[in-house]
Amino acid sequence: MNDRPNVVVFFTDQQRWDSLGVHGNPLDLTPNLDRAAVDGTHCRHAFTCQPVCGPARAALQTGRYASRLGCHTNARPLPRALPTPATLFS
Image 1 (cartoon, rainbow, N blue to C red):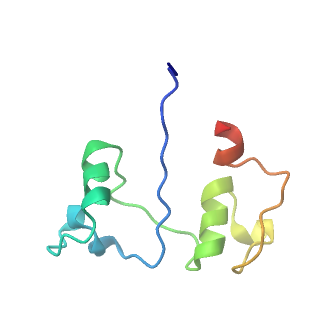
Image 2 (cartoon, one colour):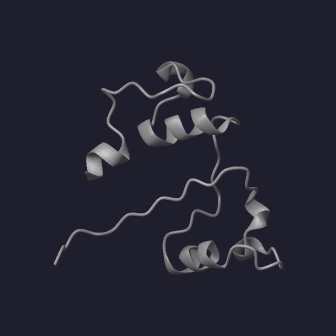
């Protein structure tokens, strides 16, 4: 049995904060995400440093501004030498 904790990070795209039931949306569109938010760690107040999805994900994965990474638009890969959660949790 593995004693290490499991970490699951959801990166959703094109989704506003109020589309989740846990934030008051009455349409029951996201029951699994709502359950994960209630049962796990939920960041009610989160902000992005980039309005475009690729650069925002690059910043989240590296802790650096996308403009410093050269990933200031979509379809730009991260520099391979940078550690990301995927490489750290391997």
